[in-house]
Image (cartoon, rainbow, N blue to C red; front, side, top):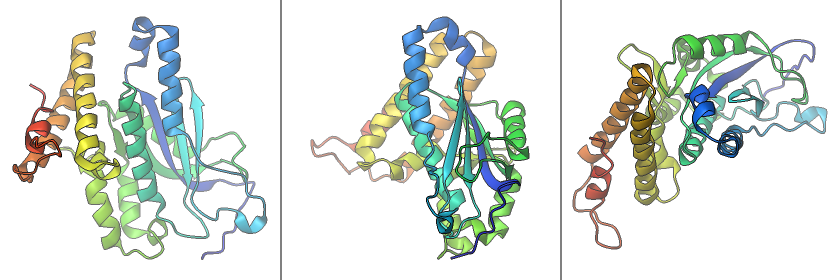
Length: 279
């Protein structure tokens, strides 16, 4: 356990993720009010925080907690990192964001976002206005660098996590942390890290291949619908990137799969997953 010196009148360092719904302006012109209301409600439920006001001083920042601030189709998630018990705040937030993306896709929503680490005001009881340099950095990264529907991780956070054990679990070495990162992150050709939610979802869903095939099928249908409804080449490029990512993950899974493994109904899992490829 680590003693925390909390300053109620100063910033505290947090993981900060800025998220929004891909193509929300277009949705305003193509979906009904009830459809948009349901979509935003699902987005908010998926990204909601768990922060609670401490009842005693010795409970202040006991574990890392998430506060979510919501405005229209945008959500700001802040997770505290300087806590009495080191519970692996960075890995926890990555896993949470995998589940956010799973929940959004189940409701027909694609999100983009950026995560960084920086100084923020969230308040002793998580009931104060949320602001700070960390939010500015996350917002600017999302606006300028995150073109495709994915959640990107600022390089400074990747480097900080590698060097700073306060972001690791209490009983972990960096090798332990790296094992999790390798399952949760992917790096593009330009070196940008982003959450590999399609691959990670296989470990996070309850019923392994059964739920994963259903999830991949939903993801495939969402991409195919996006191509049909895309208003122009800019949006089509985003769906083309998503299609390539989708197929890459499916092909990687097929490459290591035993083609003789079957379901309880004697159907090949290899065939079921192959059917999730997008032409």
